[in-house]
Structures are given as C-alpha cells and as structure tokens.
Length: 432
Image 1 (cartoon, rainbow, N blue to C red):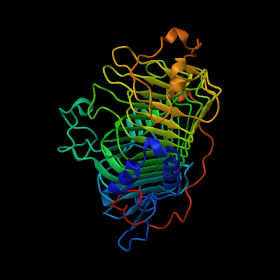
Image 2: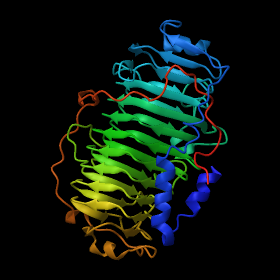
Image 3: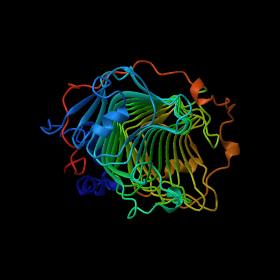
Image 4: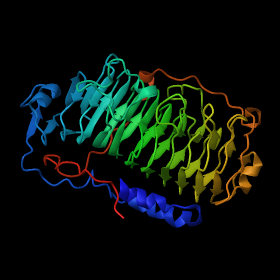
C-alpha cells in the first residue's frame, strides 16, 4: 500500500494537473501486480466442470491452494462459496457460463478467502449480490452471527480480505449489487459489465487503506453505476463508463456505519454520461439524473472525467447527517450539458467547505459562487442551495430487477484461459 500512497501524498492542489496525469497513467497502464504477476504455478491443477466435477461446489471441495476451477458452458444453479485461498474460478466462455440465482438465492459467488480470482463468466438473478468479496465471515459464510458489520465492523476480529481480482465478469439483474467488495484490501475489478442492480453496479464499502483499482468497466441501467461507502485511501477509479444509470457515481460517508468518513479516492478519466435511464431499478433515495454525487465525501481527487447529459446535476455535493463534503478537488474535468453542471445542496447543519474547481470550459453552478472556488483556496464553509432552484424532473418509476433489459454479449477475457495463473502478489498495486 505504501507505494501508491506515496504517489497519493504528492497530489497537492498546487500540482494537481500533473499529478492527476500520473495517477491516470498508473491506473490505466495495468500497473496492478495483482492482475499481472500471473506466471504459471507448477503446483496449480485444473479441475474442469462438469467433466471432472459435476458442480462448481464439488470442484471447490477438491481444490487446493493454487488450483483453478475451469467451467464449461452451461447454466449453474446454487451459490458458490470460495473459502480456500489462492483459487481461480474461470469460465471458458464469458457469455455462456452462467451462475443463475433464479430470483431466489441471495448471492452468486461469495469469496471469504484471500487471493481469489473470479474471471470470464456471468452471474445473474440473485436477490442480493452477484459477486461478494467479504472479510466479515465465520469461515464458511459471509456475515457472522450476532455481528452487525455495517455499524460495528471490527477489522481486528474480522480482518479484511487480502488480494482479490475480478476480471471480465458480467453481472446483471441482481437485487443489491452486481459486484461488491466489503471489508477487503489489495484488489482489482476490471473489464467487467454490470447492469440491472437495484443498489449499485459496483460497490466498495467499509475499508481503510483499501488499495483497490476499478478500471475498464461498464455500468449501465443500474440504480447507481459505482458506489463507495466509507471506503478510503488508495482507491483509483479510472477508464470506466458509468452511463445510463439513475446515478453515475456516489462517493459517500455514512455516519451511522463503520469507518466513516469516506475519503481520498481518485476518480480519473471516466465517462459519466446520461444518467437519466428509465430502464433501471429505482434508487433508494429517489435520486435521478445525477452524474457524480459526493455525499460527505472528503479529500477526493477528480480529474479528466467527461461528465455530460445528466439531467439534474453533473456533480453534486450533499451532507450525510452531521458529516460534510470537504476538501474535494475537481480539476481538468469536462462537466457540461447537465441540468446544473455543479451544485451544492449541503444543509446548514453540515455545510461543505474547502472544495475547489479547475474545469475545462464554461460550467453552470448552484450557487454561482462555486465558480470562484478555484484551487487551491477552495470554498468557504457554507450551506448549499435549496432544491427549489434545481431542475424539476419527472422521475420515471423504477423497474423490478428482472425486468431490466439483459446485457448484450460481452468480450471474452484476453489470454490463454487454459493456463493456471500464479498467486496474486501480496504487494501494493502501483510502484513509485
């Protein structure tokens, strides 16, 4: 973690443009040692489903550290629980290897062990999560009896998952999140497609020093494309397309949950477009037409994003209870053609402060004084505007999850799928 944190510490308001370019290159260039460093492991075996094991679960019972479960085309029913470290689960065909919850099972794939890869397959129709990575577990299932992980997460008792990689996964029409990383560190979510999630397409929550890269993904027709809840430090979100959701991106502190406030994410080089999609589940608080919402997020850096066509607001600040949006830096973005390009709706009880803007082209703002908040000075402490000055939208009803249009065919994972990869490296993703 220290390597990328050393880069992050050099991102100062006086050097924002150059530092953002560095961050974008680091994240987009595949500097993640988790997804590279895939040398062949002599000890790793391949267990083929259904040829050598009838089900994925049976294959996992036979698997040992370093093995790969390779799945042939078919529809597989039943939750997949991965509780052995350094296992790879890979489909031979991304679009025709399908783990189907049939609208009755809570999760498709649950990972409660370190060093697991999930690759080149589809997960659909679960009541909660398509793929869940969770450090809160009892050794066999996500969660723990008598523990409310959201409000009382104890990372010492329930250590975060170390090392995970999700690549070329399609996750659609799931009742909560398409892909969720909870209490997890040192991971990558790449080249995946998520749609039809009633919560968020990609969700990272409750971790400190997270060291997670989210890159090259597409999220559309979700309530929220990408959501961060109380996940901080060393998170890079780059090169993604968050378009045609109800809300594109949320960075939020939830004061009633553990590890608040959310802080220090890097959102660089993403397309956040047209998040006004009626072919989507309703967002739980009714939000619609928002590109990026920073809800009491702190010290986040946004740069070189294209934020366009969001009918309510391109970028919006709000508070979360008594927590305020502070110290966020928005530079070299193209924010244009939105209902209001930049808006602050923070309450008087938790006013925003210290947020600064250096954007490409003319923008509209509510209040207009936001436009004078150039870096490094940032905004003074102040309440935002009333919602009455914002665009008046006719918000369409949300669809039931399984009514959302299924995704088109998605590109297969690159490389030779028959090769068993080596263990994910136990290092920070980016080097100085």
